[in-house]
Length: 186
Image (tube, rainbow, N blue to C red; front, side):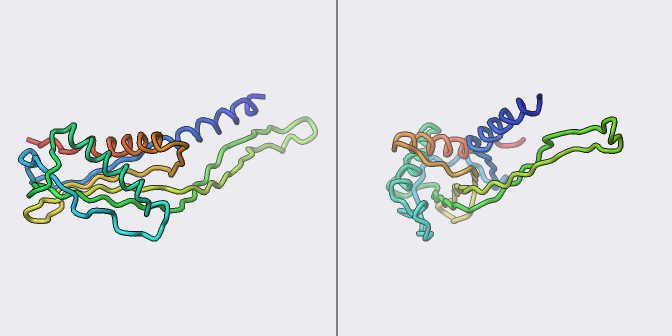
């Protein structure tokens, strides 16, 4: 009886944890003094076309750029129409992924007529999903050197309203840019 109760609970937990998280990583030049930069500008007016209509969406481009601008403004980095200290670019990709989950569904022991029978039953589920990867690069405007890169990976979702899509874009960008500028190590 217990496996019957645990199975739906496991499915719900796996579904919720798989759909809501953004996995974030960063890399940066440890010798660059990020505290001396105060202004920035977009390197390109829009992301280069990818051929995927889910990515090549001007509305999505606006949402991502607006989210980056909001986050950097909250960190006292000003958008500069003139000569900036930093150039920013972003790149969004969507790839199809496959995930397999194996779980143990039953456990049996031998009975009176078949004492040698026993074992564990397993089930494997194969899930196909789309994974989004948003990469934000920050370069020195003077040298063009890459100073910082943040990457957020998450399952692609659809939203019912533009407001929900904008809020999701802001949350993703905030998670990616949370560690920018990196703290200097002594």
